[in-house]
Image 1 (cartoon, protein in one colour):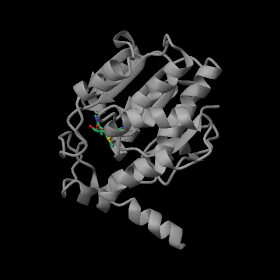
Image 2 (image 1 turned 90 degrees about the vertical axis):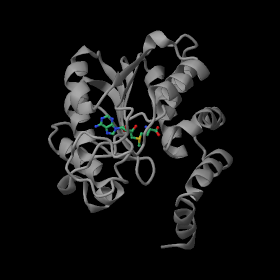
Image 3 (image 1 turned 180 degrees about the horizontal axis):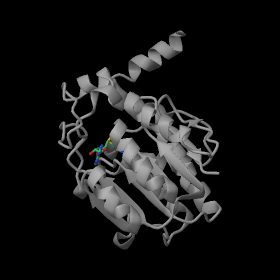
Image 4 (image 1 turned 90 degrees about the horizontal axis):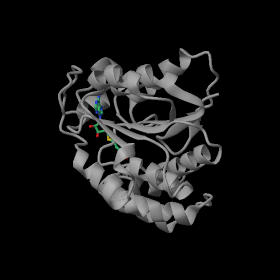
Length: 257
Ligand SMILES: C[S@@+](CC[C@H](N)C(=O)[O-])C[C@H]1O[C@@H](n2cnc3c(N)ncnc32)[C@H](O)[C@@H]1O
C-alpha cells in the first residue's frame, strides 16, 4: 500500500473520520462540476449525514442530471438517519427549480438498524451489532435518527415544501409491502440500510418503479458485506446490463437502461 493511502486510511478512522471528511471534502479541490455550490450544500447537511463528501457530491450531480433531462419521478431514500442525504437531494433540486416539483420519500424505522443475520451479513457486522445475529426487527441501538431531525433540516432549514415531503416510519419489511404500491415512478432510489435484508427488501419492492434513465444509489456496497451480497444477487437476477459505477470505497450507483 502506498504511503498516501496509508495516511488517508488512518485519517478515515474514527474519531478523526468526521474531521477529515469535512476538511478533505470542503477544503480540498476535486474538480466536480458545480463544486462551489456542492460545498455550500454539503456544509448545510454535514451534521445530519454519515456519508462522504464524494457521495454527497455525486448525489448532487445525479439530481441535477435528472432535472436537466426532465426525467420523471420522486426522490427516495431508504435509511435516512438524520436526513443529510435527503437534504443534499433537496438542495440540488431546489438549485434546478426554485419551485420544486419532485416528491421526496423518507423510509426509516427512526429506531436505528435492526439485527443482522449471521450467514448473510457476516461476522464483522454481527460483531458491530454486539453479537445479535438473528435478523429480528428490533433495534441494535445503532444509527438512531429521528423524524423530527429530518423535518427540521429538510423542511425548516432547507425550505423544502412539506406537501412534497413524505415520511414512512417503520421497518422496511413492514412498510414497503404496503407503501410501494402507492408510490408513483421513482427517479432516484438511494439505499442506505447497511444490512442484507434491509437492502434486499427495498430492491424487491422499489426497483421496478425506477424509471428508464433513473438512478439507483447504494451507499454501503463496499462497507457492508450483506449489502454487497444483496446488490450482487439483485443484479444477477436482471436481464438488464448494469455498469456499477464507483463513487468511493463504499458508494456505487447505476443508471437504469
Ligand atoms: C447508516 S444510516 C443512514 C445514513 C443516512 N442515509 C445518511 O445520509 O447519513 C442507516 C439507517 O437505516 C435505517 N434502517 C436500516 N435497516 C432498516 C430497516 N430494515 N427498516 C427501517 N430502517 C432501517 C436505520 O434506522 C438508519 O437510520
